Length: 498
Image (cartoon, rainbow, N blue to C red; front, side, top):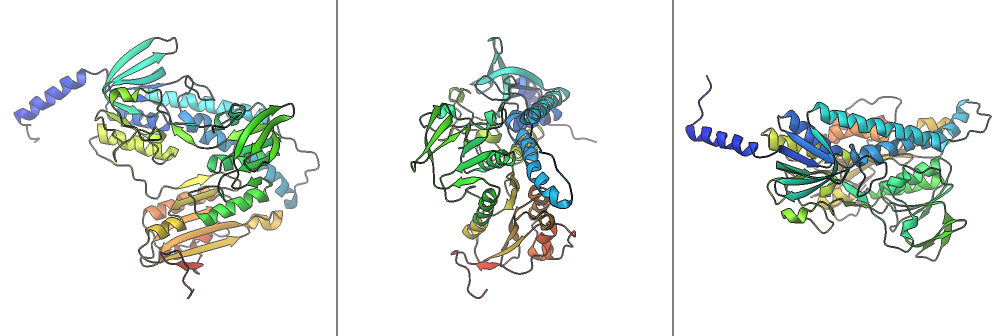
């Protein structure tokens, strides 16, 4: 028989119900991208009355355009992966000849057809996300949302009408937006938004940036036959990744015909009759049909009026939050790229899930940022989980064992393509625990998802070694690397006895 609550508990419960009734919503979410939609849906499933707002749909984002689904679905991961698939077929057709496929006629590529297929897919997904919200009982508003106070949201509808709603909790989930460098002629360049919606395939493309967006678009356009020049400030692309794997990616990009320009920046763009003239800080000049700026993204907070509610931002404009995603204002929370923690779609989903559990399920849950796998969809792709060799050395108390396997994929032995796959495991010498795994080669992201489960469970190298491989596959190399490539001390110098 359940215990009767104390009288003061009944009073508190009654006052809580009365307090909640003063608000239009238990939760109002500003931003209907991956994190915002997840938080809204799960909160509604826990019994909360939820509202969410998002700008009207357009493939290219702006201060007045957005769309339910957010960056990943509409102008990020999904359309990009569709283009990567399309670009891969160029190399596949070349390789097919040595597998007996008699391709005698010229093979043409229809960019406009692929763009239409891509547009159809993101429109379909936009509709699916709207239905997900509707089926969960979440009220969707189209328009621009701003914070009007600790418990108040102002919504400007498409016709200019302004509405105000009160909410016990407000969640900021407005994501981030691409940035342009401050150079003369920067208006002649494009960002990844426009790159995913070009009317014509460029014959000459210049990409500025060394991150995953730059590397991916360079691979896409080159795979479709364009001449591509990639400029970046460091010696190698993909700063923050394992240095050995960065070098592999650079070699593969060059092997695929991409012109790399390390330690080089763009200083000016000029429009000419023959295209866009690009000038570098080394005095070089070249012409391009398209110049892509892939120089980073910034949290989308400028128009949210957060200062009015006293919400603290960091120097990048990101919303400051605690380990539960709560801001310094107890009723206001933030999740996803707008917080600039780990800017990945699955991480935004995790943060949205944890928020809903914490606030509406009575299960305080912190996002766990350990052993998050991620991928760079270059051609071929790079995927990693856990610590890089450099990170492991920074955090190690003792020695680190590095195991590597470099091989020509079985498919290449017939196709004749000269492109090595490399795999890497970083292991704590004392505990035998696998600290990190990396792979650059075909199917790397598909393989790494399973490796991520192992690392999340705390797998040791001995457990990897005792696992039977799938033969013949590239993946089996992860369980057959028996010999230590090098043993590295915390000082970063390999030990001489191995």
